[in-house]
Length: 234
Image 1 (tube, rainbow, N blue to C red):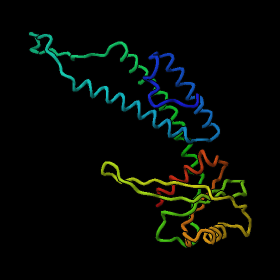
Image 2 (cartoon, helix red, strand yellow; image 1 turned 90 degrees about the horizontal axis):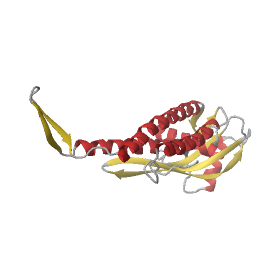
Image 3 (cartoon, one colour; image 1 turned 30 degrees about the horizontal axis):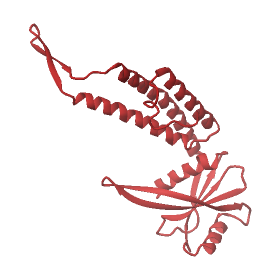
Image 4 (cartoon, rainbow, N blue to C red; image 1 turned 90 degrees about the vertical axis):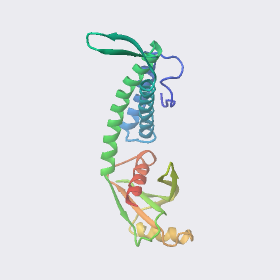
């Protein structure tokens, strides 16, 4: 199973064994991708699924904590009043919470595996600015080159800012521009100059080269990791 819906654990038949089978099939697909060093979109989806489960559990607990209680008995010996919740977990909710708790454990294990792979790949990527950097760096180019690949893949990037709930966020979008065969004459400086000639809107563009010291899938891992590194750098 390659995909899980956001609400997979409460959709359809609420059966713990069936939900576990669905999750394990999905996690097997994720593990197969991780073995080929393909992190995205699976790693981002795992994070989203884990957060959904956490939110569901927290919301359920908060709902119960704030629900009114009724006095049901008095312990005369201990001088205690005994209260019970007006509502209690029924069998369906207990089944769902069992699914949620078990799923969080399994997904967290997969997240740890993905995190280890991410850190290994990130440590193998060396980045450097190319040429004179302009003051404005929210638009520019990324040059991606794998260890043994003589081709440099060029992506144009744009960083935008937006506000949400009084907080400021930034996002980065990339678009593939083309490939350059790397040689003694076709080096990163040459590529930057060639791009500047072709794109008059960026006469002195910001440009960053990322060298991977191992073979990393471009779209599924190298580009997403480089995008995160650029956001930290800028």
